[in-house]
Image (cartoon, rainbow, N blue to C red; front, side, top):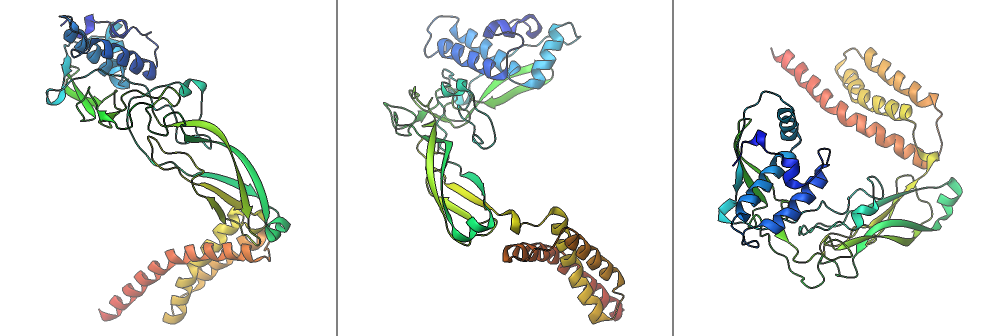
Length: 358
């Protein structure tokens, strides 16, 4: 093979020099499918397959790509040779596209229409995630309860393939590229000091299994983005932080796994502590066990009184509210501080006992 600095990996994969990682992966999977020795019987097919694998191994890694670009521009690096090393004597045609969906969308993350048509053979079943929707109520509605209709976007089970990811085949098959190992090795033994490197198989994305013929509707994931509606029955006398859960109305899982839930989280501003009040209650909780220890042991308690006083000032400054929810949140913040103060009290008590013994 030619020296690495004599090769134009971008030309080998037929991508631009400013191509994104996803574009490079897509170019690799297209060429690997055509050149794989099990598919292409031309005499030079195996050598060309090794060459595109080598190009992908370099350009898909950000660090190696930077060093390759620097070397191509004239930096004084030595040449290198490399080749594809099929793990466990197996080989197969690559077919890669990134996960067509992002778990965070629609509440965090992003979505583009390009992802709806992306296809991936990877069989990677995962349970669906919950969708959390926050609803803000005033005191009157919280006391009486309410019905809320909510329209939202989620990933639902694909009707075309019934969640399997493939219309014709319901069972996955072993990945032909990596033989089920989930990774492939590329020999770059003289490239910047790297030896044989392992990379995630772009065909199965590390899963070791693939869908035989990805569904054209969902791209092989078994789920599609859709608009859904749910009616939430918020009971009377709810408090800040209470949740109402609707099972199965979250994001559908991939490749037939169950969906998550739709979780409606109640926000009641009148019951919430300000950040300063929360810290104040926490500080009082932290100082209280140490204050009690000081009283029992007859040691100085002045510093603890100061901390408690500062905490009380922080709470009172923003206004004490009389409802039960506010006091419940205050107790939780106090308990959190006390949970940190109790270990300190025990440590000081143990040190005091040891001092008396000696």
